[in-house]
Image (cartoon, rainbow, N blue to C red):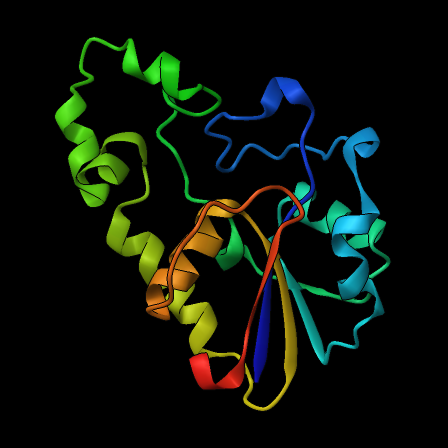
Length: 173
C-alpha cells in the first residue's frame, strides 16, 4: 500500500491561522493553486478518503478526484468551544494560559481541545487499521490529522501547508 496524505485547500484569510477544528468552513476558491496538486490529479488512486468536513470535500472536487468516501474519523481535532476560531495570540491572552502548557504536546492538546489526546489518536488509528493492503490510497484531511498519522506511523513530522501532501510508501507503513 502507498498512502498519500493531502491537507485541504486554503480557507479565506480571515479563518487562517486559527483553531478551526469542527467548524465546517469552505475553502477560498481564489487561493486554490492547482500547480501544487497537479501530480496527484494525474495519479490513479484505488481509494480516496475525505474528512466529512466541507473544506476537504471541496478540495477533492476542485481537483476532480471523484468518487471519494467521507469518514468522520478524519476530522480535525475538536477544540474546546471557547478556543474554536481563536488564533494562538488570543489563547495566549487568556487568564488561564501559562507558557508551561506548551512544554508538553499532550498537555497543550488537552488544554485547547475538547477531544482528549488519546481519543483523537484512537479514532485516527482506527481509520488507519481499516485501510486495505496493496492499494494506492489518497486521504484528504486536516493538518492536525496529518501530523497525528505521521506520529502514529513513527515518521518525522513537519509543518504542512494548505494543499501540501506527503506520500508514504509501503515499506514505511
